[in-house]
Image 1 (cartoon, one colour):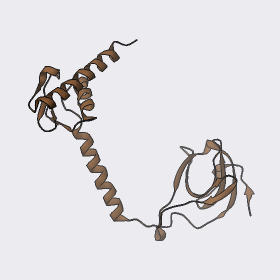
Image 2 (cartoon, rainbow, N blue to C red):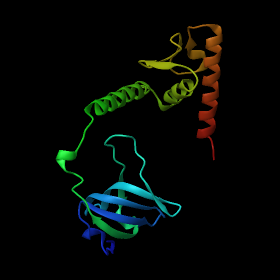
Image 3 (cartoon, rainbow, N blue to C red):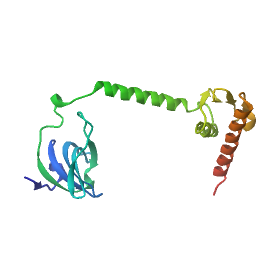
Image 4 (cartoon, one colour):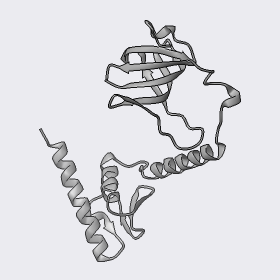
Length: 192
């Protein structure tokens, strides 16, 4: 029993809609929430239209949902298909706490690794040299000194002459990267 709806604000939580967007997407979804202030619908996607045929949303086994946030002014047209039970029913919500904890631990580890890659008290030029070295070599900061391969050290002012320690081959490689990066930085700053 499909019926045309005229205003997206008329839909209630739990409504199942067939939606066509201004971007050409067509799908069926259940309304989880609508925020009038931001004019955004939170939708649980049920199926997409592929080559004129609605295909069930493929999801991994388990209680996962394909959630989409959609600004209401991107809706070209929609049709009310029916009403389903409350999608936010607390009794039917499932949280995989182990999975959430693992995702949190991975995100924290990645944030820590990203933070270690940012030099504290160094110039943007020094950070650019560090970033260039890190593309091909293992590097880390030791206060304001760049440590490459745990043996070569590059001190301020981060010139090829500032390279010390390590084997002659490792020194030469680090010096070449520094020379190349300095030329690149200089050409970028003196560009048009």
